[in-house]
Length: 88
Image (cartoon, rainbow, N blue to C red; front, side):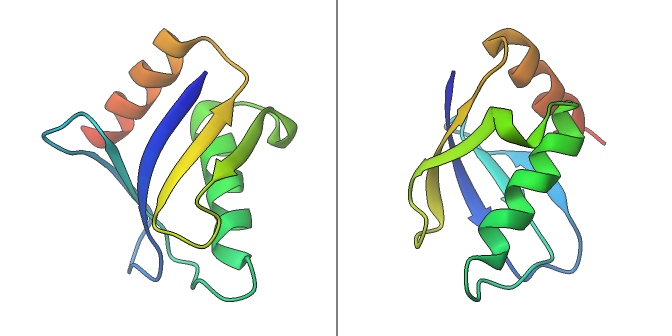
């Protein structure tokens, strides 16, 4: 499945929030230097979704806050996990 997310690096804590348009905003603590934030985002999503790192790839937006991510998992389960994380 492909997922469009808005990433906010350099945040005080890691968090997921669903925006009014249905897009997920993901706040991460890592700063956007030398690809560190992208690697951290993949690790964070991997832990959150309980998937191996290899199942998550950034397709577009490596230097942008809006990213298109490929996730090798059931779309319904991914959305459910992200919505659960957003409600915490």
